Image (cartoon, rainbow, N blue to C red; front, side, top):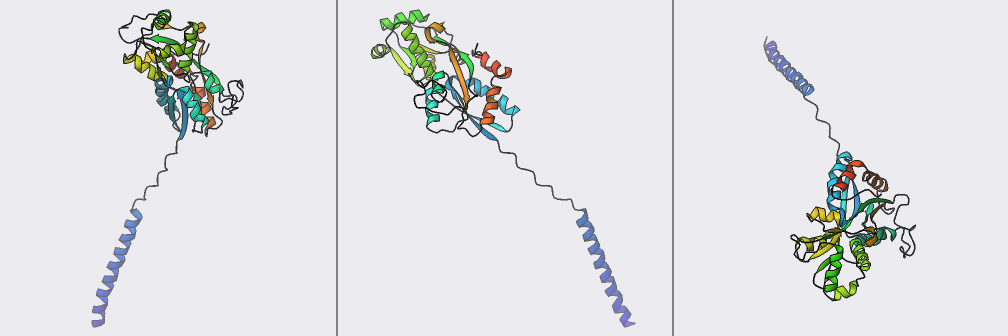
Length: 288
C-alpha cells in the first residue's frame, strides 16, 4: 500500500509535465511566422547632363516630369556657359549628355566637325546622336524704367559710339558673347575700342549678364529671349539672323559617358511634345 501511495503522486506529476509540454508545442505551432525581409530598392542611374546656363529653368521643370516616368533615372545637371562646359568635358569631367547654346562648343568635341573648328581632333561625340534641339533669340534688354531710353539695336549702336552708356555682354568664349560680337561687327563697332572706353562690361555666362541688367548696374545688355522671360525683362528689340545668325542649341550624347543608352533616351524625350511645351513656354522653339 505504501508503494502505491508513492507511485500515484509520481504519475500525477508526469501527467502534468506531459500536458505542459503539449501546450508548449501547440503554442509554438500557432506562433506567427516572421515577415519575409523586404528587398532593397533598386539603385538609380545618375544621368549627368551638362547644359547651357540659359536652359536652367526649363530643364529643372522637365526633371520631375521625366523622373516620374522613369523612376530608375536621376537627372544630375551641371549648368554653366557652353565654353566652360566644353572645357570641363575635355578635361575629363563625367558627362553623359551635352547641350550647348552654340554649335562651336560641340564642334570642338566632334571628330566629324570641321578640322578648322575641332583643331585638337577631339572625339567625344557619339556619332549619330547629335541633333539641333532648339532655337533661341538674341534680345536687347534694359533695366526697369529704361533710364537711358534705349529702344532698339540701332539706338544702342549710336549710344555706344557716343560713349554715354554701359552695356553688359557675355565673354568671348560664351555663345551669347559671340553673338553679341557679331552684332557689334554688323554695326561697324570695334569691341576692343569700346571696352577701352569703358562702355562695356562682361559676364561669364548669360545669367550674369541678365543679373547686371535686372540689378540696374548697367544701362542695357544682350541676352537670350528665354533668359529675358525668366528674369521678367521685356526685350526692347530682337536681333535678326542677318545681324548674328540663327541661334541653335545642339545636343549630343557623349561616347565617354557611362550611360549612353539612358542619355539617348532622355535626349529623345526632349524632342517630345511635353518637353517642347516647357521649352516653348519661355521662348524656345523647335529648329525650323
